Image (cartoon, rainbow, N blue to C red; front, side, top):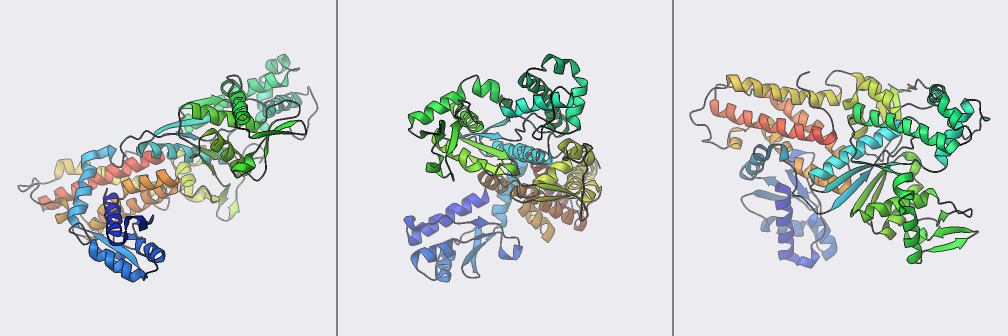
Length: 536
């Protein structure tokens, strides 16, 4: 990978000139403006601050030391180092795409094991838009970890124990007229529909709301799985039951005993508390109530312990916007348990919009918009891309008008159209390209000289960097942005350059470029989980 080689060379140069111990952690990125070169580094600015030197002097020294045949270094602005990659070096990386094909951008296997937990909605009703946002994010992030070489597991944690299951049972009894309605009960047409269709089960468990709740939760989970797997293309490797896998197998108890052994618990007002403030939480948390019941937090800690005991090194937990208070406590528990690398990603809310007007699309009396309804309305690909194109830390205004567009205004259509167009070029080329007597005589990039061709090549070879960076910071929206820019670069190339020409060698080179586009676009679409249509 070009960037990796360049980064190593820059670090080695800085070590030679200023001492190995002085080399800072610096950024090396592809600038938005191609006039600023192919890569820009801020190392001179960081070194100058550390050494008390003039940034321009440091940058000049590094630029002079880094001169070679693979890149040209120059100094810009207050001390940035800009690099222009040589055609020879670009050719080498470009050929890797054609050589590795679908494996391009895949890193060597690593020993690190990562678990991605996502959705994990209580099986007490349909999935919400927030559940869907977390679902698409977790699915894509797991794909990225796999391509980055990590052993990866997708997990759905089923909260099928505790008060919410009892409340579900009571809610069903209330709509059936067995007990009075209460404010905290679950509302909605789905509760009435289930109760009406399962009168015999309600009669059987009219004195046992917990068992009734479990029976209904099993049904709701089946529907959740159908929406996830069949309609949304989200895949899970494991469904973990709080009741069966955490409580009944003793992991909640083992977590309690571990915290006791580490001397991190105390009693107050009859309850058992964990000293989570010692690990960054804003207050200590109850593990066992004064009545002797385990809290949800203890079950979650047991779940993290179970993950650790299955030899995972890190757990990425994606939760909805109503879980802010959950983050510090579970990160504290993760640190105590030994999953220090774990992260909790809190996604933000979503609004459905018709222009500037918010839409209440739900058929369930406007109580909330179901994820399934949105997927049915705009399609799996569009829902997935639109949810992923923004950072999870920002709100989404989901433009229904744009999502329904079957034109290049819709970024999903625009990207998929680029893929279909590139595929059609290859099919046409197979039957009509002229045969070259000098095939292979010139390197591909010696023949690809137009601005659009070079821009497309440089965009293609950025893909491994996109995967590497996203595996580190989980910013999946970087991939959606990359796909859009790659599609744009391809459309620009196609509109200004004929692929099949009278020049056999140029035709060969442009066909190779088109093949590379098909490969990289296809991989990136797979990473996001967006389909690759054969025609449009």
